[in-house]
Image (cartoon, rainbow, N blue to C red):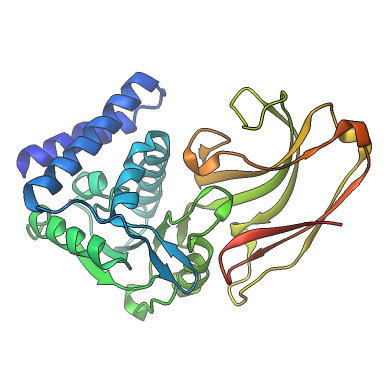
Length: 324
């Protein structure tokens, strides 16, 4: 396990490099994936479970799916950097720090390299996972990794319903249980449940997830690429200011004027993530922020478009969009 921890430290330091060198980032990401998948194959004879788990407020992805999120290197980098900055700020206050990480997957990969970097501080971690196969793996990993060095509690629970003891109210909440467009997974429901149970000055990671309707100038092709340009955005939903008491949210009326349309305009759903302060994940920097094409807006029939959008949690989390 010492060599495992040494490898984690190299990966952590690589992610902390302020300059994004894509070859270095890819190398660190591949090293991280290999480290965890090799550990798994040395401890378990079966393949990672590919079955998703349905919950009341969305789909909890499988052990295989959660483990494969490591491959999204920029996402992993930004979250690890953001969490480190949040911890650094909290360490300027007196008293222990309580961290709740909801939706850990089998490896708790957004915190795993961080544990040993902050081992000298009084930090208490609660790791929450709903998927039993993932929890089994997480428990085995933490038993081997944590030799009484770290204050880590494990909970097999639905984080959208978890009740936190008053004396364990979190200073930091971490949850990355989302897809682009905040579709399918329970990110919003989890935050709705956990934020009211946190301390008043708690940090939420990610700090904000913004959904926008975007006008994109695209060539005559069906797929969106990094070369296509978003030339106008219409924000429709942000997690930083949602209500914690409802299953659906207020409708937003977006009016797109004929004068704003370009030839081959496309309407897309855009996702932008502020992980923590200046640690952002912008369009196409991650699988979490890939634009989702909604419809072409034909230039030969240029007209005004009126759109009503509303985020819902049930029957499945997603932004409902209707053309009026």
